[in-house]
Amino acid sequence: MGWSTEHHPRTDALESCVTCGLCLPVCPTFRITGDESASPRGRLAAMTIVDAGRAEVDERFGDVMSLCLQCRACETACPSLVPFGEAMEGARAEVQAQVPPRGSRIKKFGLTTVLRSRFMLRLMTIGAALFQRIGVLKRLPVLGVQAKGLRRLPLPVRSAAGGSWGAGDDERPVAMLLSGCVSDVWFSPVHTATVEVLVAAGYRVEAPAGQTCCGALAAHGGFATEADEMAETNIEAFASADVVVADVAGCGAHLRTYQRLGARGSDLAAKVRDIDEVIAEAVGDGRLPTLDPRDEDVAIQDPCHLEHGQHANTAVDKVIAAAGYRPVPIDRGGLCCGAAGVYQLEHPEMSSELGERKAAAFGAAGIAIVASANAGCEMQLRRYLDDGVRVVHPVELYAEALRRRR
Image (tube, helix red, strand yellow):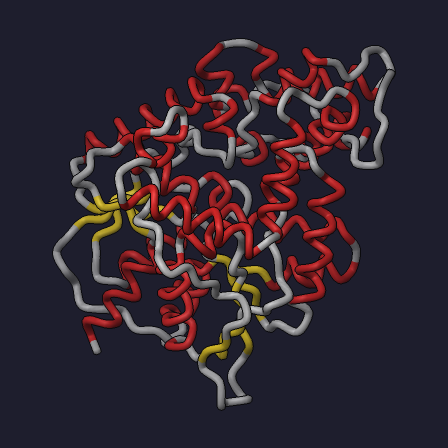
């Protein structure tokens, strides 16, 4: 009965919930199901009962925790500042330790071994890119739906890790880029745009070769020990940075949680900035220009981990405006889009329901360009929006505008 690992939810965190219910309207799974066990309050109640030794971690407990998207909208709404994301990661670590669901070994291999191996990621990407080019990928069972969200995968596959840009001026502050895992091989144009803009803003940019996956997907999946190992690797790799830049909102939000790992983790967490924050600050102080207006709207999607994990979603508005477009926030404060890492594979019906709702909101706006600052959200939007809608990272729009000016 009770917990079995050091990663379990903290008693003081669970006790800080006053069961007020302000989390209920913002929780996607509660809004769709109407089931109290599918709400943050219900999940915390289940954790509290286990914490008190009055119940055990069983399959039903695992099911309740699994349905959560970990969007953290409840944290923004919570007057008691319950660290729900941290508690959920602890609860899932307990599920993996005590009653691992079917397929856990494969999931663990993917999230803790493949994502740490650049060789495996490249090999996987080469295969997927070839399948994509001959039209096989979209016809595969289950994966075919997910494949619709992919950009055209690059060949040859290159990694940003180990790169250095803007060298030769030791007076420049050092911005270290999180190259990440999947984003490094599937979203390389976003990294390219990020580097261009950082150099233009006066930074010397480095992507340390010793870095690894941020660990977000492993932590969300309940593989806490491996996620902490990834965090320690990155703490070492980014130790000399003046600023650590992430161009995937989910990764940036997880980097900020490194503060729980002691003084060095806190030091790194304090340096983390989303690329949209960096651009907005640089435009504000004149290091980057506001570019020529284009008389065109850009619809903005707010990734949950930029809005609730980093509280930086309005920086995207400033980036879009600085790129010369009219920013049009769509469904601001609305529900999660349903991507949530590997959630769409584990809970396809819930993910699809949320994806279709989000796409309907954007479709009604009738805007041809949609900006999203998170790789997973971008893919989810592309799955459910019309093919004629361009879904792009905000930094790409700003970099394109810089190139036009030159």
